[in-house]
Length: 263
Image (tube, rainbow, N blue to C red):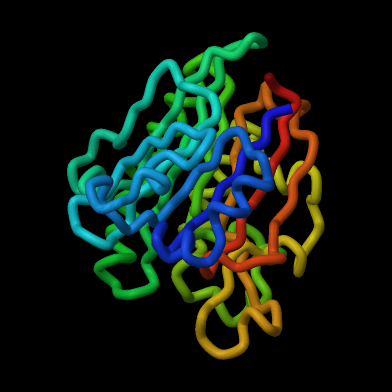
């Protein structure tokens, strides 16, 4: 069994101070995909760079305290790749990929952080540019001949069931018609499959992975499902279990845990 976790940290050092690494030692994941590291490697301790039992790989933003993605892996990958080949977004540290040659075949795991468009029209425009630039990357991954897991904070709630107040958010970033259509196109004809929705097609309140820090969103479970693991078709029958971990809070996102019959 291969356990893969995806989690937006809203700062690696902040999440570590809230017990992240103690939890990781208990949950026994094989691959952990992290988004919003918000640090440069030179600023991180040895424990944060490579927790005990893990190899750490980072694609940090050039801007300090901003964005950045990482992968912690018990397995040593055969190859690490970062960036999508677009300077604007590669400078923001949004993509890292680990390639493995497992006994039952090749596997690639991606940690991805889509831009958020909620802060301004300019950032929404950047989000749309990223989406346009990234679609060919998803197509290339799908056609690579490898089994692929894309772990991401997509910053998109794709379905009405993916957020509490969908009616009032139809004109807000993260639930715009254009964003939802882009995600639907990725999933069309099962070109990519949402691992969580494969097992739980109809859940609502229990599926959320992000809650605003404003008001009483967490207390009232006014959440959004923004964090998905999209898998290539060959992996679909190997999805064994999915869960959102909410017993501890390491950031404004919750870890999404998926077990695969791999290894």
